[in-house]
Structures are given as C-alpha cells and as structure tokens.
Amino acid sequence: MSILFVGGGNMASALIGGLIAHGQSPEDIRVVEIQPEAAGRLRKDWGVQTYDSMPPAIEASTLVLAVKPQQLRKVVTELPPLSAEVRVISVAAGIRTDSLSRWLRGHANIVRAMPNTPALVRQGVAGLYAMTGVSEEDRLHAQSLLRAVGSVVWVEKESDLDAVTAVSGSGPAYIFRFMEALIKAAVSLGLDEASARQLVLDTVLGAARLAKEGPDSPETLRRKVTSPGGTTEAAIAVFEGAGLEPIVIEAVQAASRRSCELGDKLDRE
Image 1 (cartoon, rainbow, N blue to C red):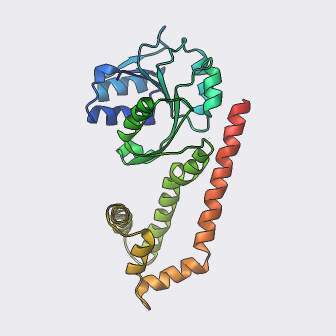
Image 2 (cartoon, one colour; image 1 turned 135 degrees about the vertical axis):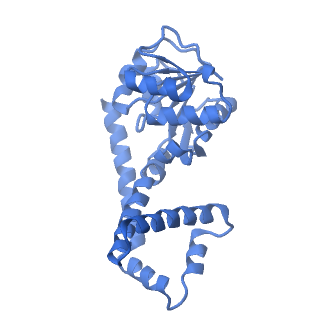
Image 3 (cartoon, rainbow, N blue to C red; image 1 turned 60 degrees about the vertical axis):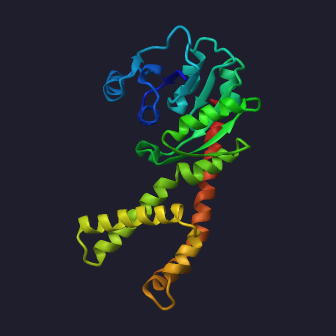
C-alpha cells in the first residue's frame, strides 16, 4: 500500500521505521513535514520522500494524520478532496471521528488510533476504532500499520478510547513513576544509583515478559512470589494498607474523565 503521512514527528517516525522493518518499501512512503530538521531526519533514517507543503492531490491509498491535535483541523481542511477509497488513520489524540469526517467534507473511511510511547521501540499497544461502514479490508490495513510498532486492541465504541488513553496511553507514565520511586527506595537502602537503576529496569522488563508470555495471570504470579511471612508479603502489606488498588482505580478514572473533557474541548474549538 502507498502511504502519505501528514506530520513527521516521533510517532510518525516510529511507524515508518516499523513498516520498513516489516517489508514496506520506503518508495511507497511519503511524508508532509514542514520542519526542515525533522524532514531531514526522516530522509536520512528511512530514505522516504518528504514534502514541505501539502501535495495538490492525494495519490496514496492510506493517509496517516500524525500532527498535534490542535493543528489537525487546519491541516485537514487544507487537504484536497479525498476519494472514498482513501483510508484515513488518525493518531491525533482526542479528535473524534465525527469531527474529523466533518472537516474532511464527509469522508467516512476513517480509523482512529490511540498508540503509546513504547511504539518508539516497537513495543507499543494501540487502541483502534473504525467508523461505521469501514470495510473489513480497510480495518485490517489499519491494524497492519499499527502492528508494525506493537499490538492492537479494537474497541466497538469510540468513547472506549478514553479508557484506552487512561490505561495504555498514559500507562507508561504510571510505570515510569513507580520505577522512579523504586530506584529511590533502592538507593535509600545503600545501593548506588547505577545498580539501583539496572535492578529496577530489568525487574520491570522481566516481570512484564513473564506476565505476557507465561500462562499465569498477574494475580497468580504475585501470589507465587508472596510467601507467607516473607519479605514480599511485608512490602505488599504496606501497599495494601495505603490503598494501592483504589488509588490506581481513582487515578485511571481521573485520566479517562480528562481525556473526555479534552475531546469535548477540541471538538468545540
């Protein structure tokens, strides 16, 4: 498939690199990027053709909108008319498909994606939502594109993307914050910073791989590590006493509400 990216920032670059690694020819990828430095990096890193302005016609079969949400309306209203067959994939957070369709003069072949930052190392996960009427073939094309940088989860209601944003979109920051605290705890016990960092990062990586690749649920894995009267039980008791689970639930719900609020604001603007 031929692909035109509008916007060539980090997420676009990650997707382009993933696609090329999965066999997509650089000759079939073009990018509209007005920043000369970013455009230069894309050409150097991936060998793709770049434009500093919108082409007069969209000849690609897939159009990926990867600009900042606040810029999207201006950008898409400057696009030339799209044929119904052009697949539009938006990775602009918060912009709902009905708004995007309206700005695109009623174009309805739209899939909205909510990827996350681990896509930068091809370990991301994205939530996908397709407008009613998007064909199975076009859904599969969108899925293939996002799978170049990780895994995908389809949602049937667009409002569920607010939950996806709260869990996986913001989720890496929750993990990073816990890692920060765990590193500080290790240093408080006398470990040097470098050793503490390696222990924490490799522990998180290993635990995530065990949970993903093994047969047991996170709850089962946690119980297996928590011996009665042991060190892990002592730590878990502190977490539970502080209300860890309700705090996490409250935090994720707050993120979901904020995602909805920001979507409403972007729609009004």
